Amino acid sequence: GSAKSSIRLHGYAAVDIPLSGFGTNGFEGQKAIDAVSAFLRLGGRLLDTAVLYGNHDAIRTALAASRVPREEVFIIGKIPPGDMGFAEATASISRMVEELGTHADLLLIHWPANFDPKADVPACARAPHGSWKSCRASTWRA
Image 1 (spheres, rainbow, N blue to C red):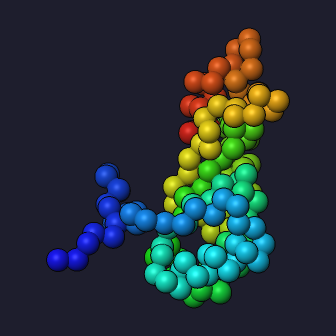
Image 2: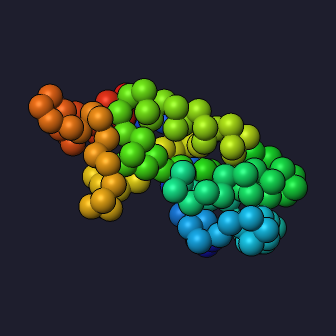
Image 3: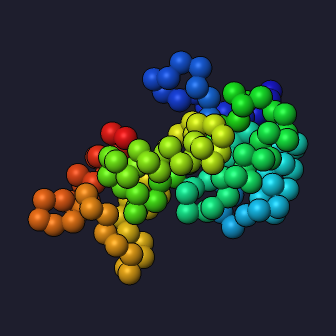
């Protein structure tokens, strides 16, 4: 028999996630366009990207040039820790959609706490009233 190439997302009718995909970290500009284009041409249909990768415009270009119907491509996007909180995540998602020229099918919090000890802590996580737990919750509500 044939190998299964995707799984059905539980609780969501007709939402299938490909089992293998292409992580776009480290690919920017023409290198990202070429790599994503080759992946799509070879039949790949899951793209993993993040605000921190700075390659949404290149992914947009590759998707448009591929002529693969958008509903056949599953895009995972990630919101960085600095954009956690309801207003911040909402703005980050809007920028992502604008840069990609389409929605992300699945959004994740990229590192659900600061991975850079020198980075500012998001407003929603700052004392005296904030916490990482409430920060993650407000981000998910966005």
